[in-house]
Amino acid sequence: MANIITDITRPTDEELALARSVTPATIHEAQDRIGALDPSIKPIKHGLTVCGPAFTVQCTPGDNIMLIAAIGTAKPGDVLVVSAGGLRVQGGFGEVLATACASRGIAGLIIDAGVRDGAAIRKMGFPVFSTGLAMHGTVKETVGFINHPIVVGGIAINPGDIVSGDDDGVVHLKRADITRVCTAGRAREEKEDGIMQSLRDGGDILEISGMRQRLIDKGCTWDKS
Image 1 (cartoon, rainbow, N blue to C red):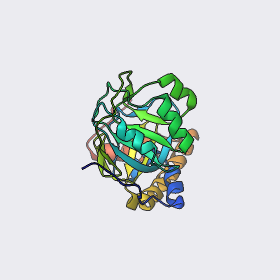
Image 2 (cartoon, rainbow, N blue to C red; image 1 turned 135 degrees about the vertical axis):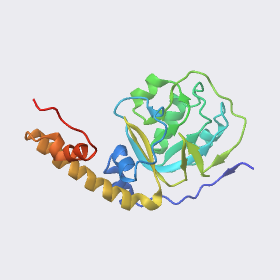
Image 3 (spheres, rainbow, N blue to C red; image 1 turned 135 degrees about the horizontal axis):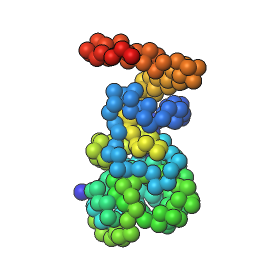
């Protein structure tokens, strides 16, 4: 039976700030290279970013009635994460729904299907991550689920988990792991900042990274010049 859950547990403000302080790629690395959604799901405009609690939506392919229901139910700061069956040719989200999202303070949309009205949404600057643009419309007939566990881009996502996206794509982070993963991620970024400064100062990438010895340990040799 179709069901809409309105009350979900969201990360704290401190947890959200921590998640937003590191990039999606860093989150992916810091949690042992898991959680990356299928790379076909990308922002419809370069430079768009999104990070917030997942407000999960299960739609029947070619039908957007539950997406509309979710827009009318989500709270400011939520990210709509929509499982739409991977139907790349559908365009069940466009300028009207983007306007509705922006007016309610919804932080963005992540969907495993197409969207339309790309030029208008890009002009608005509303963060939309999709499999691309498609003009095919959708019906409004089949009810489904909101704020139940879903799978999007090959990743299982629970309501209230973190989703974070930029030009590299989207990563999922379990709510219980936010502090551990993001603290490790910040340490990683600080280390990388030091490496990049050493490179700017003329350092050798093989020595700085430790890869020279790793290559030697694996049996790699260099011809003498």
